[in-house]
Every structure is written in C-alpha cells, then in structure tokens.
Length: 101
Image (cartoon, rainbow, N blue to C red; front, side, top):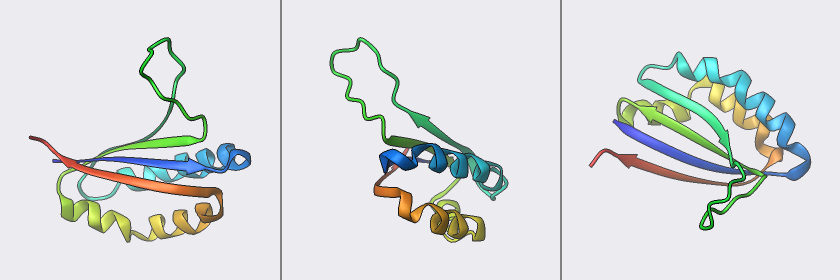
C-alpha cells in the first residue's frame, strides 16, 4: 500500500474556494482504480506544545493500492481539470510518498 501526504499552501484569500473545488473532486478520485482513501484536512489548534499550525495549509491524506495507481491518478482527466482550476490559488505543494515498513 502507498500512503501520500500532500501539503498544499493556499493563498489566504483563496482558501474557501480551494476547499470547495477540492471537495467537489473527491467523488471522482474515490472512483479511481486503486484509491483507498482521499481526504482534505486542516490544522486544528490544540494545547500540544510541539505542534506547528498553519491556517493556509490543506493536508491531503491519501492511500493507494500501488504506486502505479497513484501515478495514474496524477494524469486522470478530472485531476488535470482540478489542477487548472486551483493553480492560481496555490502557493506551494509538497508531497511525501510512503509505504508500509
């Protein structure tokens, strides 16, 4: 199984619109072959001293059956459409691709 943690920094004024577009695309992604989990999460304020938060970061949690399924996801038509719609809203993206140990 492949786990993905994507951190997307969104422009402050675009956060609400970004989340709306992202959530609208979730059903499309969940229909993809090999997709096990795909969700958007946001930092929550806590009293945990070592926690770092950023109100403009959307963290995407994904699980895929294999790396080939993840790679197919990157070029799926609905993902290309999503990327074109949010491109001007996003400041940075970082991606961690992990596997079970």
